[in-house]
Length: 389
Length: 214
Image: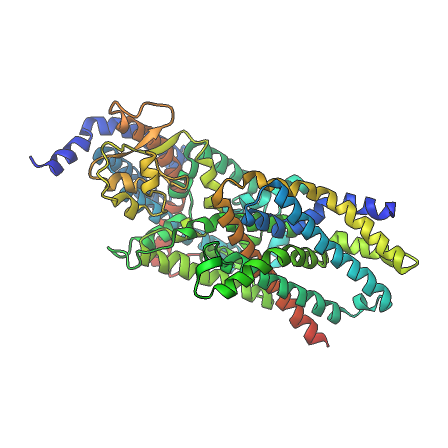
């Protein structure tokens, strides 16, 4: 048996053990998706079954094969696409358009998104108000629920949030996987500091203007979710800026570089989230004795989080999203998920990986389940009636 | 010293620092100097602000306060100040000469000039331009100054107001505590450049608005 096949067999978990390990996830997702009662409407029942089988199938394969990234990516990209289908159809159903009017903002009907969180902190401390036209509790995507989700996910995953929870991340990840090889390889690593500069500027400018400046001016994802109604030259300029950023950072550059350029070269929330890696128990480590310096991990990392310096230190950089791409790419198994404070030797890495996978996948399954089902129902409706609404 | 001006400044210091911090903090981080050097830069920045305040006090008095009544003119003045300041900030953020260029680059003359001019002028110009911004504390001070009976009293009112707002800036030089993190220097410069883009936009909009109304 050659080494590659031997490694593959070695990495695989037995069928019985895999089923046992998947049972908790199946039970939790069954309860969450059904909310205690199976849907009676045929389209909803079909969507429920498909989402349940698809998501648990992915988890089953993760446990069985010992591979993380490619399988995570399939669900992560599906999640982002389904989120957009579901979000836009709901917006059009409720407002008749993707554009948010001033009246909607005054009524606090703008859904709150996690990217706003860093901008709200200083103004909240200074003025005891949240500078966003959303609702604190209740309603769709309320501020309190998003803060609770963010705190929980940050404690459990650190910057893993960006690869397992964020409903936008799947977009640039999807585009980054279009081509087999990168068309642009040399990127000035100085630009990896740009998200921190954007973070500093938007946090200070939000405190200065008491408004979520990133949302108003820069957020590329407004292109595929909601945006302010164009009623002035200022809003027109803002629209041109965020649509251009979407095309360049979310579509073109990821496809050409095979990296998540929006997340690693621009997103202020990503920069902010990197700081939470310091308090999170999971990290990705490198065994320098096993490493043969092939640099495969450096070239595959979608967020520029590994370089020769970090390898020498035996770990990934602070911006690591724990996507598992480098771990899967390493032929020497020199990279592995790790729990801080536990020994780096002893061959317990698969256990560490599973301990990371449970919370990470649970967040992904929880967040994606509803959107996948909803998008399926809307698509069935589109096919059957010619309209999603 | 005018006590009412000082108290007005003191009570609005937080709002004032919120207006000035987006420019001052990235600049201090970008310079990457220690606390003492940062003190000097902050003083230069504050000096620029004081100049802006005093200029307004003088202008308001000498042209019988007409400068603020004619909005097109004040838009043009502030717009021009913003454009000048933003250009300096953008040059500082994205094009400022690296230390190695000071001696041996092909276009060393230009880099030398920028490297020697920017550190001197930028904090003063930045302070001047942000001092001219019509933030709520500034408007309050202006209202207070218009009630003064003489030019000197108006200037003294603005000076007292300046002292009150400046007390909170005492914390700014402590950014120097992070100067050993060299990456913060890169981040600070990039952030200063990005702030420059924001002020360039604001300046152009003000200029266009002013020109349209003439």
